[in-house]
Length: 171
Picture 1 (tube, helix red, strand yellow):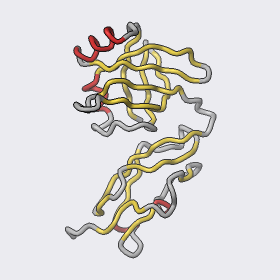
Picture 2 (picture 1 turned 90 degrees about the horizontal axis):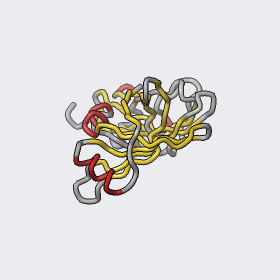
Picture 3 (picture 1 turned 60 degrees about the vertical axis):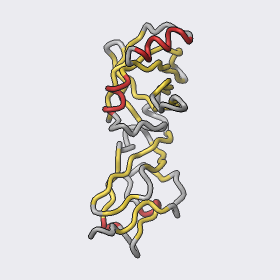
Picture 4 (picture 1 turned 30 degrees about the vertical axis):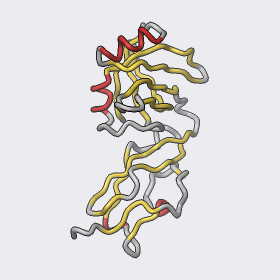
């Protein structure tokens, strides 16, 4: 699970948010069913590195806030429309006992990826950070989302007939 450090005590408002961004941080908020909304900020560079520069909504993250760790889903990612730098993040606190939808990265081993991630549903502890597909998984030169091997207790949300990978032209 990806771990991200967040700081509390963020001032609200446009002026304070612009100042944070200038200093290399991203304004964020943490909320959930049993969670009062909490104003946060994270280091933009560290956040992007932690997620391998693939910052997308739906990813599960261990968010470290004030000495405790909270399992969260990256609910929304806002970027500057021209510069594409992170401008705001929304984190949704997750209940470990409830089923939820999440985005799982797809890693390739000897195949050409057509999709970088799939949507799945399950309990947070069962949802992997990534799944690996290889040439052995291909059937007729391509792999559909329905054929991706998922752990027990995790089901596919992405349409089963969505192409995920195909045979690499290199090999």
